[in-house]
Length: 218
Image (cartoon, rainbow, N blue to C red; front, side):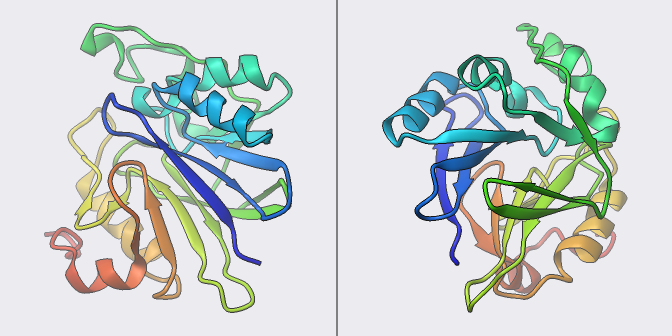
């Protein structure tokens, strides 16, 4: 069955938050609620959707700024993040909001994630893949394709259409990022759709063919 996916793009940082579920079901997961949290909540209310979980790809401020507001709307929804990025949620220096002059913190995570485990919410099964380099604990969420539908990657700031995530932040590593893209994303079926934290969606095949940044250590 095809995945139902909607995007709410924050005006600040042009960051993509995703609302993901299955057709005909009111339960969804929300991935990376950013600064436009009120608009995200308005979408959930208008579509009569229930938040089963808040999944974070990493702990930078533009991807966690809306967690607090979303928890107000859905207090029972657990917050999940990669183990190594968990300290960013409650530390404005680590999540890079304080250096930009607007300190932001979020509620602590309810569950810490490790590479290779799976999580199940809203009828979805998502595989967690740890892809560090943009941040130490960055993870992506992979939904396998079924019945002829391509798989889906909720990828945060790892792989973009024609680009990759920045690696000049604290804890970043270009080598780790490129190695992770090759090992954890380019091994997926070519038709797999990648929904990044910024910019338009792409596919594994398109980035393998044309992305100028994914040479092994280029």
